Length: 371
Image (cartoon, rainbow, N blue to C red; front, side, top):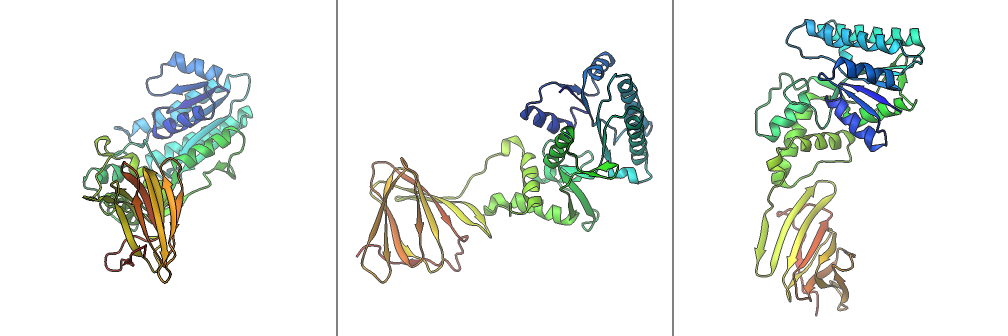
């Protein structure tokens, strides 16, 4: 299938083209402002499906709304009508088409042209009145509040929130792209004459801003958001995509001494904490137990023995572990335990605990693991 994409260098166009190629669609004609008329004509004559994503939403002159949203659409459809077969067209409109402003009026006019083309030619048409779209590669400080907020917050730049109680209707770019490719394959999500992205979110602007600032603070307090919440997961991915390239990394507080080191890595309120522990050869760490705290040890480098003893028993249980064979060892409550480096190199192991460490209530009690 030969696919024509207008607005190919735009936010939606870039994401769509990348995913089309991921799925094996290689004959893609990319149309943008630099495409000459001769090339455009050839693409239209050859294509089997059109994603019409091009449009003008923030011009210097109001007349550009008509030129970019109406006249170009009319020109595209006029040439498609000359084809010997009906060519399906998917068009990205906007919820602004419901409003009486220059952008909305011209988007509505373009919709009418698309529907007329479908009636005249018998071609299948897909018109999506998209709400606010968010995700990677959206241009900040242009027409997306979320892109602007992500970009500015990641760079310690100020943002302006006029009314935090404003409610935004949102769709995520990957959901948009999936829906568009479903439409390409005849499985669109249709509601009457319009099509829509099935997964949508309604969120207050102030809540979005609070989340974005919490993502930024996560580097300091080692917290990660609740990615079990679908919107939070997608917003977090969006925020991370706007990090400055020179700031992809950040340092952790490594507590080191003659025995090795201990470094907290990630903390969550509902999924516990992850830390990294390093033990020098011949050193033993631990010799404590917990009432409720549960841990998992995973040695990824070196050789060690993990010893357990139920606090009211004398029997010692041993597990020999090494980075040559990854094996998780559960640390149950009520068992005092330690870990000893029995090799010639450092032991590096990952610890997961079922709760973040609370210095006010550490739930950690010293007791020798061997008697």
